Amino acid sequence: MKKIPVTVLTGFLGSGKTTLLNRILTEQHGKRIAVIENEFGEIGIDQALVINADEEVFEMNNGCICCTVRGDLIRILGSLMKRRDKFDHVLVETTGMADPGPVAQTFFVDDDMRDLFTLDGIVTLVDAKHVRLHIEDSSECREQIAFADVLVLNKSDLVSPADLDALERRVRSMNAMARVLRATDADVPISSVLDVGGFDLDRAVATKPTFLAPEYPFEWAGTFDLHEGVYDVVLREGPDPSMDVVVMDLEAGERAHDKAVAERALRAWAHEAASLRAGGELSLRAAPSTLVLYGMGAKHFRLRVPKAGRIGLYTQHLPSEFGLKLLCGEIEVAAVASKEFAAGHSHDEEVSSVGIHLERAVDGDRLNEWLSKLLREKGTDIFRMKGILDIQGSDKRFVFQGVHMLFDGREDRLWGTERRASDLVFIGRNLDREELTRGFERCLA
Ligand SMILES: Nc1nc2c(ncn2[C@@H]2O[C@H](COP(=O)(O)OP(=O)(O)OP(=O)(O)O)[C@@H](O)[C@H]2O)c(=O)[nH]1
Image 1: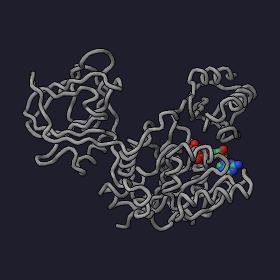
Image 2 (image 1 turned 30 degrees about the vertical axis):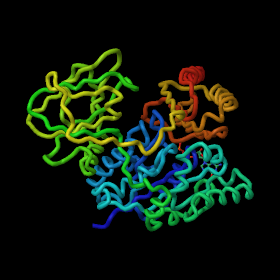
Image 3 (image 1 turned 60 degrees about the vertical axis):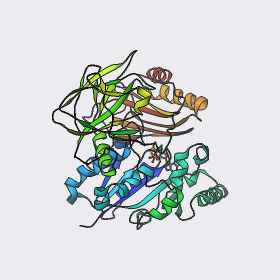
Image 4 (image 1 turned 135 degrees about the horizontal axis):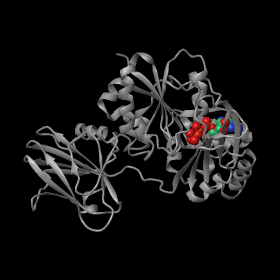
């Protein structure tokens, strides 16, 4: 069967990915496109901003954007394959905060994915006006540019031609191979971004030698040979007050850290975690358990092994950080094999999101005043704002968008039977949730 081409759309927060996506979805190009959205922010707003595409948009889990992205993506692509006859191209819009590496990696590292899909290209939107604010201090922003097959210098209406030329020289120095296009409102020919003819893996590996080193959401995998019976998993609060683990059955001869087995664990990790308090029973299942470790002292969890055999234990952090032990009665059971997986990336801990959901209408004037003041004072730290608002006195949804100091809003479709509410998401540095919530609440009508 012919492999399905996948286009990955990346670009820093607010660079114009959704604008391009909407253009692609509304233009007549004869392709049926399945869209996967990976958004950063606590309230899913992006999906609501994608037009005419209710049925085709799949949303990935929120949360950690780099560690879990591959597992989530495999899960969604797997379910898409059940509707194989409904589409002929897949578009993945990554969050503006994401390094596109792990997304691209999915189509090379995982055997099933490699057989079914082919990465057609990485298209990176560059916000010509704001990119200079991020290029130095965001490695994600630089990697998005470095891995691109097509670079779209968007928002060219907001900068002078000389600035645009300088930007083009800058991005070319970071990526000499990509095709560079200039655009306003992402108005590039669709043929220049879809079916571009193949992501260049050799170049990606040359740019980043660890490109194909799989990233996992767990830092450690241990293999244990166990008898039938009940074991005791003991650990205490480490650097985090909880830790996710997956315990899986293995076949004889398999080791938890073998690539094919670790990929199985990665898929298990993409399922919803069940929270488990001390004293609870850990089961062998293809989903993570969140061990709750708040408070002083060691916490015990039971592990029931129904049949003698081999198991794999995967831990989100290193067991040594949590004093983790597996006990059979009083005796500690040693792993027959184990491996640490170093995270190939670091997290930009400083950037976070605050989502506010109010089931009330807001006063347009008061909102405008508050946001203007907020941006005057905090505009460099607030990278992105998005909202869908219920404005008093209007029957239509009001869509609000902000990128740094620039913001605009417009009326959207009628609310109709949809439940009216006001949702606002901020993404940025040093965000004060309480203050933002109080400010928003003061705008209620
Ligand atoms: N002036 C100007 N505004 C643009 C252009 N392209 C997009 N915008 C606006 O910039 C804002 C952000 O655009 P989006 O397409 O939502 O950006 P995005 O990359 O999807 O944003 P995130 O998903 O939050 O990272 C919106 O208000 C757009 O209307 C452009 O070329 N010129």
